[in-house]
Image 1 (tube, rainbow, N blue to C red):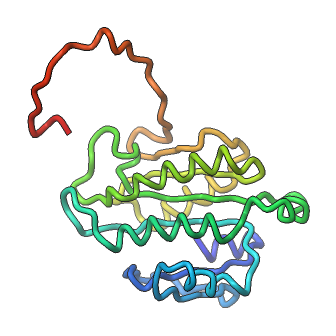
Image 2 (spheres, rainbow, N blue to C red):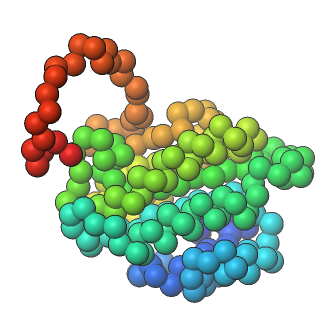
Length: 212
């Protein structure tokens, strides 16, 4: 993704968290600034971001090997990082909108919850902490009128080149809605609220292992 953005004329900085294990399949373009992040503290992130004024953020959630309903500390760090990037990059500052010409600021997040935000069938290996990122991005979309905000959910099985094409395509989408976009075997989709008459629901107080 970084190299693709460079070809599109972007100046790219890659923030590499120490708690994420990654295997590079391609050599980074020499113009990409690779910034190591030791911890998720606000001080460390401020130090990492100090030399650059960012106009866009792309946050990619890594794959996980953890099975079942667990809340790993590394997963929580990924969530915290996204929140702190939203706070510290200050993409909603009026000065950015004024000086950006035709370029827009963007805050794009990629999660791996199956392509439907874990609303249908939860994958065997999934980081459930990622669900908190949807709330962040939807909130920013309301508060940051001058920033393009989108969260994209995919299955963890997608190959790197497919993920790259999805992220670049969504990043350049002319339509600012919907904020939540998923991809799975059914194609590109979004979540839609369904009206429910609570008075028409059947009464019951039995809870089984399938209730949650």
